[in-house]
Image 1 (spheres, rainbow, N blue to C red):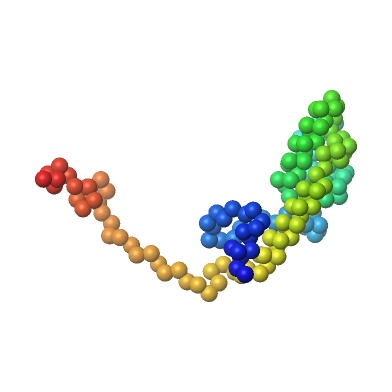
Image 2 (cartoon, rainbow, N blue to C red):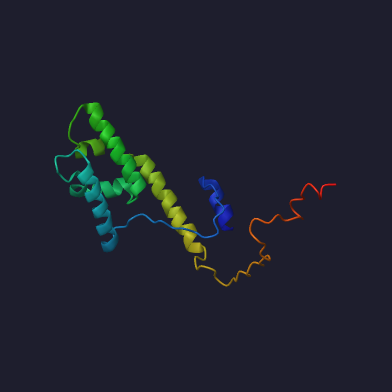
Length: 159
């Protein structure tokens, strides 16, 4: 089964790219988790939490609830802020995150991430593996601002 046949059933829209671009989520590895914590610190600095570190102090919960994906984290922060507003609170608390955590959706997203990793691991990711691209033939250059009589017949050529 080819890659295109494998992805048909998972709701992926083919976009015609010739090169696979992989933006993996942050992982619990040392370097990756340090970068994730820097992102949490940036979010913490912008959130209404009296200078606290709501996200960094609860990094494990936040990591599990976002899978290390910044898009999921951003959506979760937005939902937590909406919950804070709905409750009439002035400060963002971990309880706002706990009540807006999307457990089932995150499980399904994790399954899609795992499937994507599996499919990409089967595909040869080496750029230009064994294939050479022939050079494009060049057209003779024409003078700028000079009409091409073959393409644009002038009024005297129309008769």
